[in-house]
Amino acid sequence: MVEQAYQAATSAITPDVARHQAAVDWSDRLVLVFPLWWWSMPAILKGWIDRVFSTDFAYGARNLGGRIGMVCATAETKSDRFDPADGNNPLHHIERGILKFCGFNVAPSFVAAEIYDLSDDDRRRRLSDFEAWLTKHLASSGITGTSS
Image 1 (tube, rainbow, N blue to C red):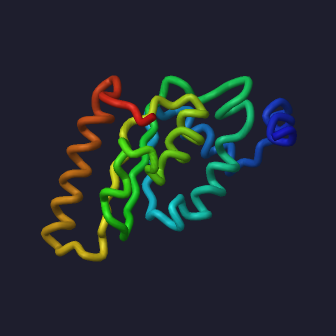
Image 2 (image 1 turned 45 degrees about the horizontal axis):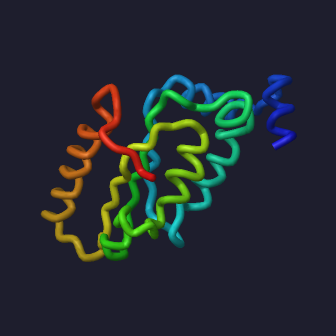
């Protein structure tokens, strides 16, 4: 964190990170889309967050407040494992520990579960459901619900 703060203060951020931070800075919505991997995001996405969501950009002296963030995950496991009411939602640490911590208003996550058992028609329905979910939770100027 100390090195990230130093890089931000001295404008010594690498060009690739600067490009990604500029894109996040420009945006008003961020949707993290990934396959659930060991109950979390894949390492490449975690590495991107570690580099781009740095001290004094995403949290600290500055944060990413005023934006809406959402998680969309695919999973082979049962959909009831993502019930936000039971307090054991495996996406909670991403929603609160990353997005909310960095100032995002967190829209409810979309999970396409049990993907290995889907027929082609089921897959088309899930894509249609995802489109409706995005419209409901991200298309308006505010969010209709938050994860806790």
